[in-house]
Image (tube, rainbow, N blue to C red; front, side, top):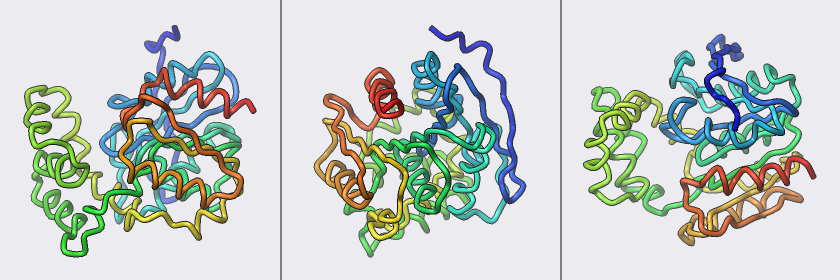
Length: 269
């Protein structure tokens, strides 16, 4: 197994001058990983997945702006996240495979639609789903931004997990009993509005994705609810020549043991 004690933080600079922290591990063609909400290099799926891929690839994991060791230049715009990804790809040599999960998949898809150069793109469960997020009577972004403005980080995390994601009400209570995990989530809570802005109306922008020319693999877990599976099918249908795959037995928290072989197969076709 790859020794992760050798990881070193490096920094690249995004177009607006924001420092973006990243680390690389392994040897071979470059793969850039794009995290979803609340995650960064030290918290979430990137490091375990990077370790699983490191025997065949040089894997670049980075902290999205406002998270971990990356900067947070304001005002925010989803376009800045596209520029951040471009900066990491440039640091990786300008010719990289890209994998995005959840809202990170949304960023990767928008970057591909904007013409950011990638060798291939793989996504897992970009969250273009959930009618409750589209309820015109509820402005989730405004409510989330008000919580962050009041520095109610724990309340923001709870609101994201329960009313928005649909987790049972006991989940935040359970997580509060795990201080290390809860504090990690609260630390990046101010970036939750960023994820909402990235996803926009949570409706698949089919016309925009129709301009994607990068070979693309769209994946969903076998345990995904029907709206999530339908959303991934819609993403795949919008991208010319894309592939759609179901990872049986997987939830939104996909295992690196399940996703790594899919990425290796697609990135070496």
